[in-house]
Amino acid sequence: MDLSFLIHALIPSWNSVSLLAGFFTYLAIVGSILPGKLVPGVLLSDSTRLHYHCNGLLSLFLLVGLLWISAKMEFVSLTAIADRGLELLSTTFIFSFLVALVLYFSGCKSKSKGSSLKPHITGNLIHDWWFGIQLNPQFMSIDLKFFFVRAGMMGWLLINLSVLAKSIQDGTLSKSMILFQLFCALYILDYFVHEEYMTSTWDIIAERLGFMLVFGDLVWIPFTFSIQ
Image (cartoon, rainbow, N blue to C red; front, side, top):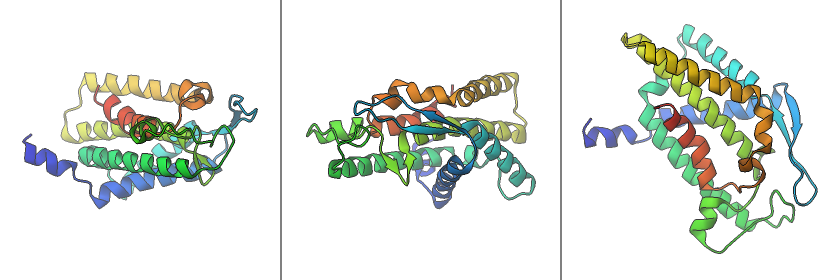
C-alpha cells in the first residue's frame, strides 16, 4: 500500500458520510421508541439524577436483522463498511473533532447551574476541548455520552461483521477469523445485556464530554478493537 493510495483512501466521500449519518439517525430514533429498561443514574452533586433508556440489545438485534434483510433484497452490501473502512475512519474522526468543538462552544455559552450542564472552564482552550466542559450534554433530549458509547460498541460489531462478509466473499475465511468474530461478538453482546451497569461507570458519572471521550467512543473502540 503506497502513500498516495493511503491518502486517497482516507478522503471522506458522500457515501461514507451517508453511512455514518444513517447509523446515527437509526440509533437516535430506535433509542427513543423501542421498549427498554429505564435505569436511574447515580445521584449527582446537586441531588438530581439522569435516567437512561437501556434498549441497546434490542436496537442491535433490530439493526443486524434489518441489514441482513436489506442485503438479501440487494438494497445494501454487507461489505460496504469493509470496502470503505479508511473512508469511514477519517469521516468519523472529522465528525468527532467537530462534535468536540460544538460541545466546547455550546458549553462555554451555558448558563446552567445544574451538575449535568454546568460549565467547568479552566481557560485553557486545548484542555477544555480535550476533556470537555459539561458533564452530561444533550442534543434533542439525547444524552450524548451514553449515545456515543452505544454507537461505538455497535460500530465495532458492524465493522467485524462486514469484514466477515468480505472474507466469505473473497474465499479467505479462516478458523482464526471465526474465533475472532465469535469472541468479539460475545463480548459485545455481554455489554448490551448488562448495558445498565454502564450508567455507573467513571466515564458516565465523572468525566466531562470532550474530544477525548468522543474520539474514544466513536473512533478508538470500533476502529482499533476490530483490528486486534
